[in-house]
Length: 317
Image (cartoon, rainbow, N blue to C red; front, side, top):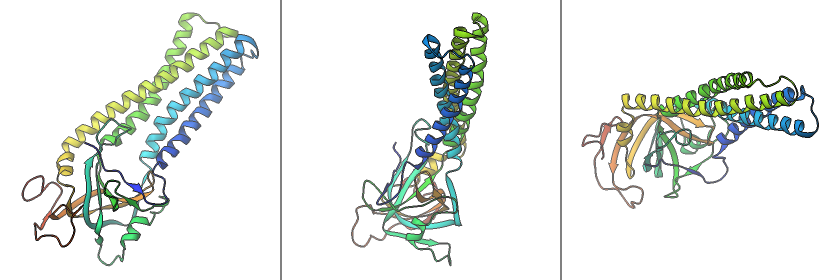
């Protein structure tokens, strides 16, 4: 099952998260690459095979730093991307233009249930007395969260307000990936040093440079393997947490084509530069009448106040 994406209908950077993580990748490459340069410089072989080996030390070290930077930077961005608004909780009404789960392997998929609420019926219902307008809810940036821009539902082309029920898979995978990458890099350095000792490589000249290459390569391999393993373990723990909390049952309670009210935490998602409800705390089903393409007045239909996963006639309206 695929999740619901949105597209900016004007300004806005949907890849702001990638830009942030890239800074960590470049920073990690620069720091560890510089450490490799300093280590190679101590050997002081500026010409011939020694120069090429020293260059290899720097390049491999930079690669190891880039891998570490990716896993650490992704985790930092993951937990520093959602900024809460004031008021913290709002209620929005509208047509569910899209409903789906962002299923897949993290970090490429966070496994959240995602929904696009919108259409001509999009309105702010609460909190009472806040004086919020739809435009303000969609575009007012939360303190520290950066700018927020309007978005549309790509399939229908209608104005949309993105809403989610968050999975724990993304949270635990981000933590596991960062911790695993650091642990793997440390283990790789130790293994590389042990290989040098076992091989009896000299501590000076060509032998020292070969040893540095081995250590740098093992750090890179350990950082990648540790990050991948930690990411997978974290994702598994997150899946268990989702099962305990009935994530899929709650997500499946919301269907595209229904008029609904969503209540939940109003935030600015700085990773995508738009506002959304994340997480949906409760939902109210008004009517299911294919509101995405419906025209004219809706038929009299089902009106029921329900919690997520509590449709009176079953899981699917």
